[in-house]
Length: 143
Image 1 (cartoon, one colour):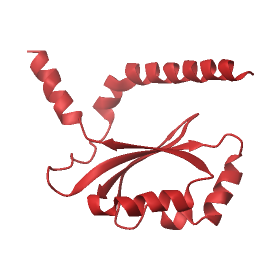
Image 2 (cartoon, rainbow, N blue to C red):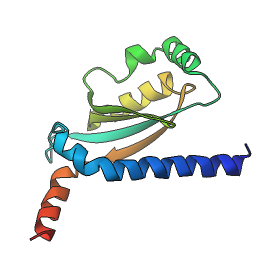
Image 3 (cartoon, rainbow, N blue to C red):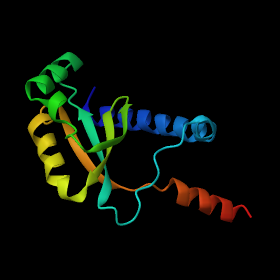
């Protein structure tokens, strides 16, 4: 398959997946357990979402072997950094959200650079918990 066709196929799959999530969200919201509370203002931490995107030129056993050799399973996440969520996103890779003390950001970055690169491509996103605010807004708009 040519590159543009692969991109279109991936986009189509992503849109189908997103549509499924949107349609399933109301039912899921009623049955899912409550996530950890939002980070209180001023506690010195922030949420960091990391996309660990599969290197599709390698099989999963090859990726895992490389991660093992690089010390990933011992070093990521660094001790004392809380894992808030860790999901597999089919066709993409893994999505990890960490609660990071601000002074430990460099340590998290070094753990990624030292142990993840080569097995995964990475993307980082500062994140915040919007669930309570969104629920409040929904309730206000439905009055």
